[in-house]
Image 1: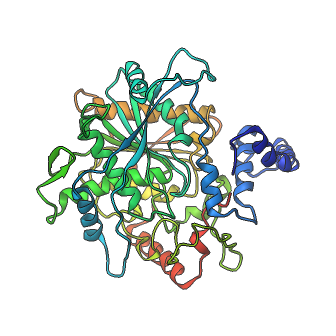
Image 2: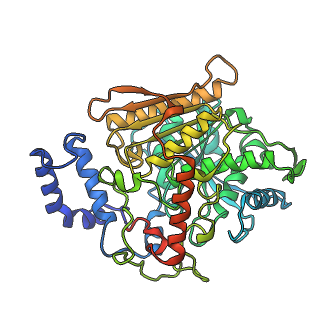
Length: 488
């Protein structure tokens, strides 16, 4: 979906004018099933996205990917400093990642071991006292970083992983949310351009995430930043990026638990002693934690969401062939081999043990991914992890980013940033994160407290059965190719 120019937007929107008029009319007459929950603006935005994603003529994966990677440019209230995270001379980081994957792998699960590669990223900060159209100054990247840091007054460093179903988008598409987080925390973000599927399958993106985390802790020579203590780092992300955040937490926990892990690893000019330190917190919006898409909310909450619901194999539309899909050799999912969909570093919903984790903040709407979030929040809280759970009635996937400027988005960003700040300050002051659950009513925004440890969630045995059944359906061809990822 190309939204890089007014003409491109017009080509998308103009054919939808009759549909939008009908949607507005039905909403105004209280004939829409969501008119009692949504205002008109929300109705139009969500239904518009839904109509685009439910197109009977899916766009090739390569075209979707290219469109999502068009850089909108840098202007306005943000400082951006582009960096490249170099490959360490030794292979130790890759080895401990593969060791953790293998330790958690079950018989029959397969994957292709990735190589280490340079990772692009963007330091992102808030630029005050300029209008939204002020161009980026003509400075070196080092000078941009210096200007960015001159506005930072809080030690919070957000390590951000963007959403996009693992095959779309990049830091450029998320400059708005990351610069806003930097503003609200008075800190800075490092937004990571991890390797995308289907060209680079699991665990390539997770390896890039681990490299970025170590890059903050133990900067290579000539890095712009000084070492960042783990107690000042908060992992953050949306959707697929939320998956990477939680998978990285599980990866760090597994590395530290494993008897096969070495006592030290080499990273550039550093010798790092294990166990690896965990970040101060992990804060995610609508994290996609079940790659099998097997939980009841996938169907039960579809009327509030714009994500495409799973449909039968008979009705499944195949993606047009292109240069990147299907892969060679073919596989059943864009992100990974079908056999490994239930691995806890692929689908964090499958993780059995969250004990020892950093505090977790999770925000969901009443969306198709809600059940997986509830399961993980409840399990982690019962295992002693500090968990903040926030759910908004009738809101769709990643509503905070999709409905920017709405009261719901403003409140969610406020809570998101406050958790980041509190998680960092909590190590030094009496501001420690405490387990808490909140339900926000639609339209009124009224808050209702929830007991996170007693959330209504699918039980562990049922989760395992559903995920295995969904994976098995892929093997036997009862589901559509690539589980019908968004068709833009």
